[in-house]
Image (tube, rainbow, N blue to C red; front, side, top):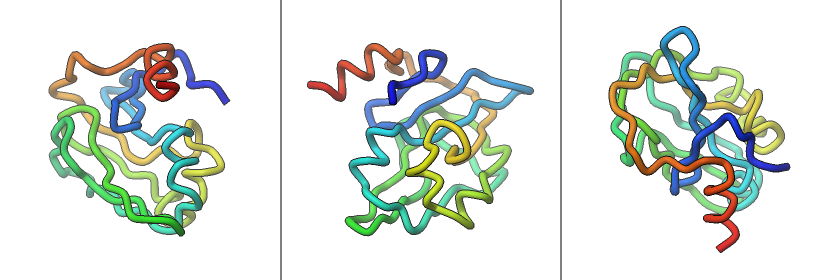
Length: 125
């Protein structure tokens, strides 16, 4: 699968959608999901939590390891994907669709987010 062109990407392997109804959606990339292996547990920030760009805001546990989840932007969490909490395998099977992690009302977006082509080049090198 290629990285969807309409998304932006962090070097920590999270993706960010454009805002819909004031909130952007965050997930991890297929590259990250494949590197993790089978995700078996997801810890997400709570609705109302403030997240900061580049800082940890949760964890993803797989059969291989535990990895920190980083927020690609700063803002307030407006929604978490309870489907992923109940079925963490969605992160592997549908990282850009049903496996999204949380929505955030963005207050600050770093300038270093990558386009799909830039992220593809980043993960290839």
